Image (cartoon, rainbow, N blue to C red; front, side):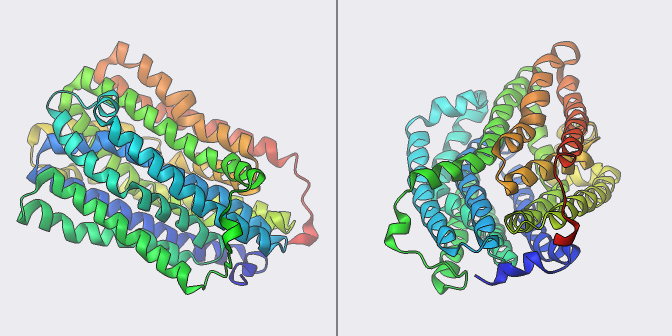
Length: 449
């Protein structure tokens, strides 16, 4: 596994570009797929279809975040193991990741299928939204285990120095979905079920590509049957670090639960559709920050394992600056063309009039998202689960959810939109403050750069 050795020798900016650009392209493509999916559903199914997808998204990603958490937790261990010259530990970690991902992915998919209606009702599927949501989610659940595997694989490819492969793992489902959406939804007339089948097939293709690359043997892993047997200590370490990702998505799902019910209470089904459009655009705006965040983790983890602390500090600083600048540029572009962008999703003039001002309010502090994402990922890469967990939960758990419970009582629907920029600003302040505090405790060795 020599591809990752350059993490300790090549210039930081070169490494960030090499890791972050493929990651950002993958996330961008995935975001575009989400947007295209919503456009087709919005134009051929209607606002009820958008609302149904909006309800299902947090549940789907909560389950798939198990694979993501196992992937990131294991990738942190693998990066540090490679940095400290322990390939056997890297092999054992990867084997345990495979076992954990499939066992838990299948278990949670079956659990959701058994209790599908009560789960969807809790997450805001009420009135006319309920039946389309059941139709959509029951099909999506078939692909969740393979989605979890693809999510897990994505982190591993970056950890062993194959960011372009990780990018393809994310691009494949987007391309498949964009091809199948018009066929299943528009041509065959399958409606919301067509969107679900397109998404499920896209998960299968993504996982198949990841499996194909692993079987080619280029990643350098040489696992045996014994590596697949769960090791209690290693499993605990994987979940200790990966639980940060799982907890983040868990809080995001809780956020959607509170949000969807509040939106339905103060604005009805159309308000949920409004946020469905806003959420898709948030994914697009956050592409640079997420890409740079994911790209920085293996660099930080490897250099920390190799005790090259000056390179760790430099990676953190450059990642934050780059992500903030790029996010600000994209944010400004979307802010200028808000009416035109919203008009692509729907021709419903009432929905457009509701969405434009709501989108502009919720996006006010979005460029500051880089501070939270990168600071939490930084501590994950170092293997420090507690600060990573606390910083991960800051926005949704400590600020946004409480604000969503309080502000609508005074400002109704506007209170929901106002909660977002307030939470973003407060989170950025907390994350910056903690990073400054933590950096004072680390003694850097100038000779290690």
